[in-house]
Length: 235
Image (cartoon, rainbow, N blue to C red; front, side, top):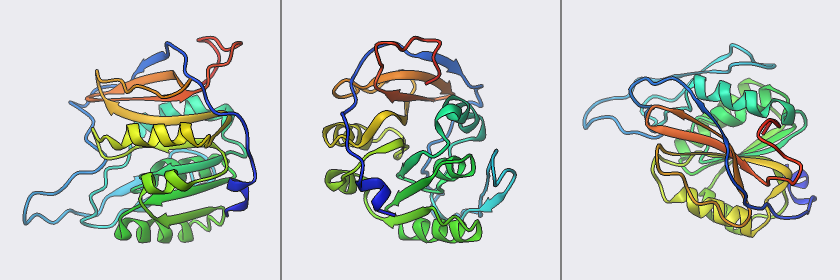
């Protein structure tokens, strides 16, 4: 699976300005992706539902006691509506993958390939089992720290999903490495989440092109804002 990731080179992304904004409900605050049960409390297995595409409606069990909270369905639905014109044939990275919700949804909707980066051995093993059950041969899971992987990565990707643990400095570290190493393909998009009211600084010439909010969490798409882009052009 490395050839498609390593064979393409091109210009690095650039920063620009304001984004379209959408509010996605409010359930009292969207919980962080990674959370821990109380001491002595066993976490029940969760369920992840794929929203659309080839695997539409598939319900995938998450491992019991895994500290995973997949990106909520309402947020994923908004995100993939934004990405609809860009999914067919896309090469993706799901960094800090956890349940793999974002990469799985992308593959279901026509992405050509996805590399999942997950540091937890338990979560990475569960994700491999999920991909095997879906016969998702165009996907690969690496048990690896995403920051360390980005620091050595080559090639370019059309979609990079960045959903590190809530309110983590790793978002900024990942953005800096992606920009410095030119990992985003021309016309590519980065998905990111951050605490509401604390919009991250984007390096180089990356621009926040779309933005939404769900409770305590803001989310958006970043990329290079081309001269011909406008607020009405799909991100």
